[in-house]
Image 1: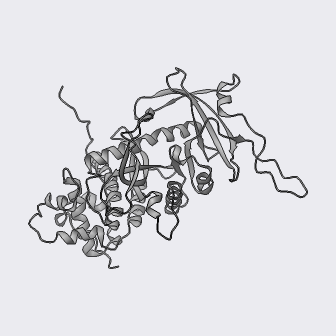
Image 2: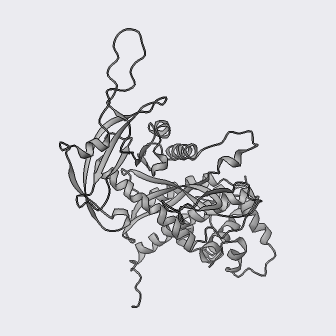
Image 3: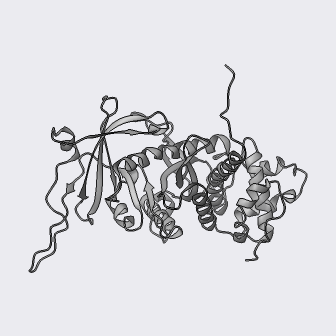
Length: 407
């Protein structure tokens, strides 16, 4: 691949000079002609209102009379470059800007549905619409399922934790693999690959993966616990055991678990349970909340699978407004308050999904080729992180004030 030249002066690019300095290492991942087109598409995607198509991005830059639109379409559907390599670059950029050298790198993972229609979209499936569905009302939608990994970090000028997308992969349904030689990959398979990829990108760093109930699976935890820590929910009736006793001399298989421990439901109603009161800041992005926590270590086991040592966390509301909840962490030495704070911050992933739809036009793109589809949505989500980084640089120069609205 022909490497791109160093970033040109800001007068030759529609992007501000400070942002170009942030992108200094990115041109080496593209050829020289492709990189110049990438700069135009990035600027146009930021500025364009409404739909985020290649045409809209070029028109907002005043290029509606140009005849090279197909060349810019080729950045997404033909050009040779790796979305995964760009994601690795973005991860290092965000960690260097927002995470201290000794702090844990907290990554939230979650899936989202991009509503799309069209018989030419091969990875399209029928899924439950999480926005319009409820416990008593099931709504199906046609679209693409994406698994997004986002850096969860406190942004000082925003006054809250934000989810900054860095790696987004297409996770199609089982129907997509029908008639293909490869075996189907589940959402857990994709999550395992994402977690291990992030570990390879950040060797020597403590990485914490935070997921919802969909990732509370013994097979997933067992596959990644030697590389990253995982925080997720835990059922109140989960099978918990003491660690396996030392192996006795003689023949026979060694024990994989010890004696059965009380379920968390029993622990919840046990008068002898020791509770500690803590204040969780920005509970699900709102106000601070006082909760009571009980915690211990155990082995989570299910027949036919390797046992997983965990630290469980039982949380109850002293005012009785919230139902009891249980969580787990594969790091047995993790601080209970940190575990709960990490999981609560996971809600910011949903906020990011909503903001990228509202402000960056996710679900308005119209590509139908497989390669363009696999690149466009991750690029728009990654653009959210770049815009946040740009605002962070502006806040360092001039303090940002919250918006005020007339009554």
